Length: 466
Image (cartoon, rainbow, N blue to C red; front, side):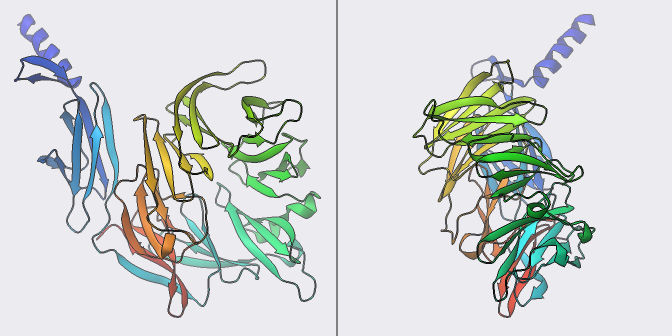
């Protein structure tokens, strides 16, 4: 009896570890596990031409080799992908977004004109502007199926009035992570610029950064989630503004070419040429650091120098673009007297100069975008895929993620979804190019701006059928 129990337990352990008996050569072989999920759920899964008995979410033990997976659900377009499975690994195909065969599109609200629109970070609000020359913002609350609207207008003392006969514009630059504060770029008298932080819950608390701190920033980025900390660039210097303390910090970084914010409290930057060393470098400084730390240095002639940080399952990843090459590093950053302990994970080349370099919110995807497409390195699968946009753009702008795995494009007036590796590309609906696109919180709808016969409209397509 004891021997039987030991044998049964051993067999169960081998099954759990993915081992199976190969009848052809009489050997035990370790396979892997595939996990399936879809939005919406309930799709049938076909694995290498064999339909599984259970619907998504589901799983299957598979041999260590390449497999083809297809998911089908009545009323939706099929989803399919090939994936390599190594022995003893789990591969997650949990991001399949099924698109209806014929998405139902409805106009939610019409306007004579819409000149600007931007969605809040967590898909709760769409801020729209009928005319950029007017300091009024329409807030569409999309948290529920019934969309609600609110108009907010900037107080006159929050901005500088233009000279008589001169023009002005109020462009929504960005939202803070708290979804309460917005950054407005006010341009007046042709080339005068000032930056205004607007509190959507109380516009009387709007702050004109340019006036309040006597600065003329060329770039402003929100910091921590409360929307009260911002980082600004003046000339080639980065400083921090604290609205609660009404303070402007000392120069955090000098001689910069560009900067980005990671995690709300860390400044990433690329430098101009250092005349002493004839080099450029990438580095960072966090709020709790006294001075910058240089990560890498490059020859003065290096172009397209960009930097991005990410973290995936507790491991720090750094992406650096230089000329037409992207390096992905992993390890410990330099900090004070502590030297860097970084290893190169991979390098890949892109056809054209990278316009943007990012690491996605989950830390899994390093994305280098060019004028005609993007290249993604998948940290988990250790795989690089290049994708070409299928349509030209009226104006270049940074690509946007519809969720953690899928990118959207509105090129040539068509909303198109691309998975991170370029698979399962889907046209969804006609849109006005250059505006905003977002999912609703429950994934039921995708919202966008449309050009209509009478003007413009906030519209939505139903992605999850009743």
